[in-house]
Image (cartoon, rainbow, N blue to C red):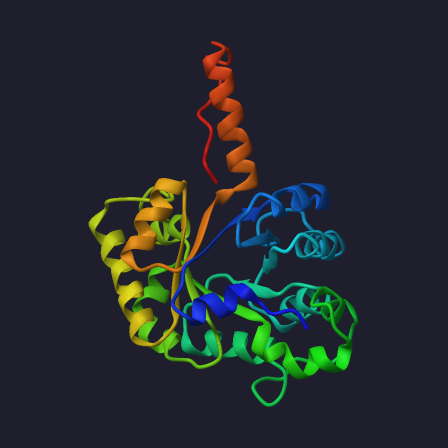
Length: 265
């Protein structure tokens, strides 16, 4: 059975860097899997990507030696089970604001005795290059579970959330976190309330042996966050990168003067 290199690196205190896939397209996923990121997260929370397309993306990513992750639409057993049974190597759970929500994510991700994920399906085993029985036996050791803190409620409950056993990383969503503070959503900010919240989550994660993560707009910010101690770092998205480069080209050509600025996510 293949080893989840992202989970292993995080356990060893190393940084692991990837990006978000927002296009519902296995071809784009396969192309991005060959760029060199450690992992790619298929976005199912805010896109039109369905389970069939997501499963094809997982296959395309894993086939090129990259780790396929997915952000599910919401923290429910159905969402988690379906993506894992169809080949994801890990799940990112949005908007975790309490200990109970963290415990629910763990229970729905892990097989007995650590959880109650039900047995079934073949694509999980195929994705890891093994047989179903081996997959059922070792999945708890390979599946990556990432919980998102992206609301002031989550920051306030950080100690309770991050002390829950059974998950691997916490991931700060800057846009939603700032929005929950009544501030302008953006990937990075020098706002005092925001920087204090980020520092609190980082410190609490380290104290509880959880890998801290965050979403950033570009490579420069990723390097800064890595120096601060963040390990699970997402850089923009494939669409953000595509539009940013296209916008740069158009500006160099003196075109598109009346077009709005391109966002980096």
